[in-house]
Length: 188
Ligand code: AMP
Image (cartoon, rainbow, N blue to C red; front, side, top):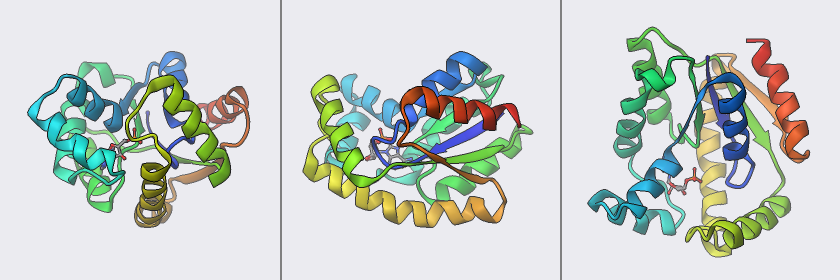
């Protein structure tokens, strides 16, 4: 089973992806986490991407596509994957479809978590204190939110056309969102 968790920064994608990982054995594939690992490892790629990420902009498609490609057909994804923060462009969505098809897999559902902007800003401020992420400041956050508006308008129609898109109220507490997710996932 392969699921995309879609939603603005701070919507709770990472939290819910981890719950799905524990409960269903699906591998969480977060391109944001992979990029942050490159930064902490101080790799050349990490140092180069940090500049873009700190501005809240999207990194080039080929970088994240390559990161995801390394996983889709691997053993850790034998039960499937939860894509968290990927795809963010139509090119990424098409590349994902193609690489899944190559190994006889497909996307089963795209779940959009809906959270209003005010709630997002306070969640992000909380996360900045807890995790110290350098792109969790209000300025970069606004750019990320703006980027989200643009890329969701590009990516969601792609999945709506395929009848794979569904929405979920991300304003509820973590357990209620998980419960709603379980209901969707168990139906697949
Ligand atoms: P995230 O943790 O998913 O919010 O991602 C943090 C940052 O990493 C984003 O603001 C982008 O700069 C970059 N990033 C993560 N995933 C992608 C992606 N699929 N496409 C482009 N940039 C990405």
